[in-house]
Every structure is written in C-alpha cells, then in structure tokens.
Image (cartoon, rainbow, N blue to C red; front, side, top):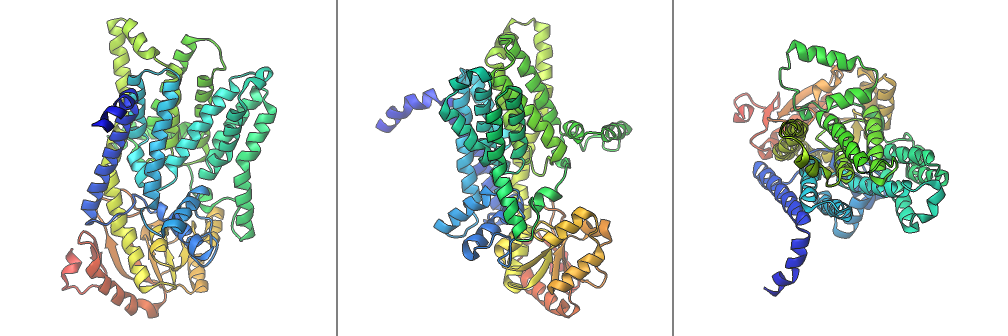
Length: 568
C-alpha cells in the first residue's frame, strides 16, 4: 500500500507514457505468445535478417572475424553499431537468440519516454500526447519492428533526437549563435556519427541538416556535422576495402527502391481493374523515384499531407519562418524525399518506420494544441468535412497497425518453419563444409558453414557481379566449383532472370511452408551440386524429416512415395 501511495502521483502525472507502454507491452506479449503457440514454443524473429547480425556478432566474439561466417570478412549489414551491441551482449552473457529482442524492447521503451517528454516540454496536452504516443507505438509499428530483431528502434530514437536538437540549434540566426547551449551543440554533434552508424540511410538526414545549416549561415556547424556524420562510413569503408570488399556494405549497394506490396492497403483491391492499370502506368512514367515511392506508399503520402497541415497551424500561431518545429518539418520532408529517391521502403514495415515517427512527432510539435481549438471554432459543416478528411488520412495508418499485428506472429512462424530448420539441418550435417545458399542469416547463426551467398550479401564476388549485371548461370557454376560447394539450399525462381541454376545440379528435395509473409519464397529446394553428394543429401533429408514441423510440406526424390511424409 505504501508503494502504491508513494508512486500514485507520479503515475497520475505521466499517465500518457504509462498508457503507451502498457499498449506496447501488451501488443508485444500478444505477438510473442501467438508466435510461440504457432511454433510449439520455439522463438524465431519475423525476418531472416537479424540472424545476419547475430552471426556476425557470434563470429566477432568467438573468432575475431567480422562476417557471417568464421572463414573471412564479409560486409553484409547496413548497420555498424547493431552487431557490436549484440556482440557486447554475447561477450558478457553468452551467445543466444534473445539478445536483439530484449535490446529492442529496452530501446523502444526509451523511445516512447523520449517522445513523451519532448511533447510535454512543449506544452502539448496530455490527451494529444497520449494519442501521439499510441500512434508512434502502433503505426511505426513498434511491435513488428521489435520482432524483426534489427536496429530500427535505435535508428528511430537517435534520428528523432538529432532532428529535435538540430531544430533548436538552427532556429537561432548566425548572429545569435552564442546563445545556443554548448551542451546542446555537443549532443547534436555526437548524434551525427551515431545516426550513420545505426543505419547508413542516416546520411540522408545528416545531409539535410547540413544543408539547412548552410542556409542559416552556420558554416562551421555544417562542416563539423558533415565530417562527424561521414566519419563512421569512411572508416568502415576503408576497413572493408582493406579486407577485399566494397566501400559500402553489399546490402546497401544491392537493395534498391522497391515498395513492398503487402504494405500497400489498396494493392489487392481491384488489382485487375483497368483504372488501376492506368494509374500504375501513369505513376511509373514519372521520372523521380521519390514521387513514385510517395504515391505507392499511402501512409507516407498521408504523412506528408499531415506535415503540410501542421506547417499551416505553426504559421497560424506565428509567422516566423525559422522556428524549431518548422525546421523539424523541413528535415523530415527532405529526409523522406532523399530516402524515397535513393533507398527502399516496405520489407516488413522497417525501412520507413523512422520516417513515420519523425513525421508524426514533428507534426504534433508544430501544430501544438491548436487543432482541437480550431475544430471547436469551426462551423458544423466544416467539422464534418474535417472529420472525413482525418479519417481518410488515418486509414493507411490504421491498416498498417492492424495488419502488422496479424502478420508478426505469422512471420515469426514462417522463419522458424523455413530458415531456422535450414540452419538446424546444415548445422547437423554440413558444419565446416562449403554450401551455396540465398538466405544467409539463420543458417550461419545456427551452423558454421563455408558459405557461397548466391544473392551477394555475404559474398563480395557475387555482389560485384550482380552490380555489374553480369551474374549468370555460368558464373554460379564456376564459383561453386572454385569453392568446392557440395550442396545448395536455394529458392528456385530467384534465379530465373539470370538463366536459372546450373542444369547439372540435381534437386533432391523441397520444403514448403504455407501462409508466407516473411520469406523470399514459400518453397526452398535442396540441390546436390556435386553428383556424388546426391545419395548422402537424400539420406540426411530423410533423417531430418522426422524433426521438421508437421506444417512443413516435404517433396522430392528423397521421400519414398509410400511415405506419409510426402502428403504432409
């Protein structure tokens, strides 16, 4: 009772933060319980990608090698700091699968606290503060992003702080530069390298902040920020080149601007409609990827409208062009356009999650408490129109939040059924042997194999060939022969555009999963690259088939046609 009485005032005062944390933890718990039910109590992340970081961290701690395998350096990650944080955890607590999830839960909690105190500091009412926190938690969406096991919650946190501090610093004209707190400037300069270390896309934001600093005639600040932001990229690039890799990570060079279909709320509606076909043709004819990306991602398009409306409210409150909130909106808009032009969106909500949070927080700070007052002073017809417009703008975010909560446990199940089983299989039978594969995360975390990555994230020679457009069947054959590859675990149709896999590779079996939302393809195939390995591979697949989840459908020559496994 004394404990409750002691902390009741604190809870009452900060109830928006408490409510948001309860919602976040409830959603995370629900997703985790659902995923564990689907997988029979085995935890797996919602994507294969976090296992790339985990494999690199494991090899860094155990072998002193920065790479997905212990056999050599590989630049497979677009984050510098995330594998280091996981490696630190592994060095202290030992190698395990839960570290990225726990790190993300902690970082997401800190993120919500940071958003809450930023809004409260600017006098945002508790009700609007709570609504913004819930939107951040559910529309980012944090539960799905946490379950990716990747660095995106940390990216959102450091990006938000950089934008907020930059807004406060650059609001002061060059003549009043001395009025800016030294601690504030040091904090902002320290965040610049942290932003680019967290994800290389952070360079977009640093570039926009530097541009605004130049416009504001803060030249020394712009130069310092640019140098500090570029330092981690340059240092990592030099280390990478020294080890025979490329200056930028393979993942950054190979992944382009490709909006993800299942995140588009209206993608499946009237897909064969002539109107939709004309619409897509018109959008594809536009020259700038940024414009196409904005139109193809309704939530970002709605967010840009919200930001423009918030700018109008900020102007209504005061006509000064260079206020902290307006500068935050400028940084958000510039960063979004650069991201859409040069990077990807989609892929399980994660790539643009930081843009969603930045846009929401900057818009709330800019609009302040004015929208409810404006609504109360409007005429009934105007209120009705505003309500309809607000519902339309909210629709993509509601869809994003709802679908993400449904897809997260299913994605975790997909990864467990496919990638984790592939890792367990290779770890049991092919540890230390040369294997060709496409998805490289779980198989390298659970098995120490000598990998030939046919997609290029973990093999620089493949990445270079793909970038030049000369990667083909003959090159696959030559690389496999040079590395002494015995078997391949691949997705067949990924290689159709380059001529397919070598004809002499013998398919021994297939595993198929259902209701796939996370894996490249639903069916993974096992090939004997060396013909002498066919019988051995078939025997291993037969032995391993007994421990596969019952939901995995098995096919191929390794199964006896009379076996019930073939019909599972």
